[in-house]
Image (cartoon, rainbow, N blue to C red):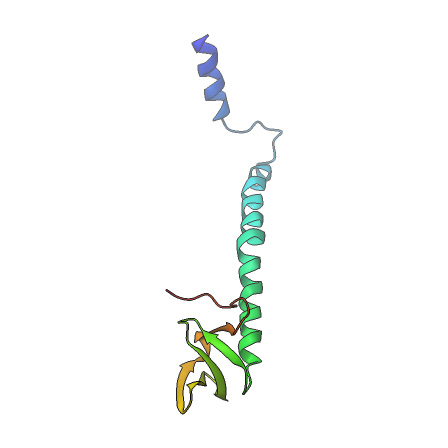
Length: 113
């Protein structure tokens, strides 16, 4: 009985026969890469594009929240930074990448903490 099991296990690791195409062995690897792409990479690209569109559409008067939790109103938009008014006569300048989303809505960008 154990001799038959040993032969079976050894047969599983043997080279494919002359009629088996070696490219057939690549199908499982291709499937793993396809699953990885559709489950991980594609949604990440979509989310990144959505965040980039949000940051490009920022304008004066938008009420936003930063990824650090600071609430404010946009008073000035530059190429890489945004000026926020967080209280009367209190303005801060933050990087555009630090803007997490609009106030009262689900954040688009995740916090780095």
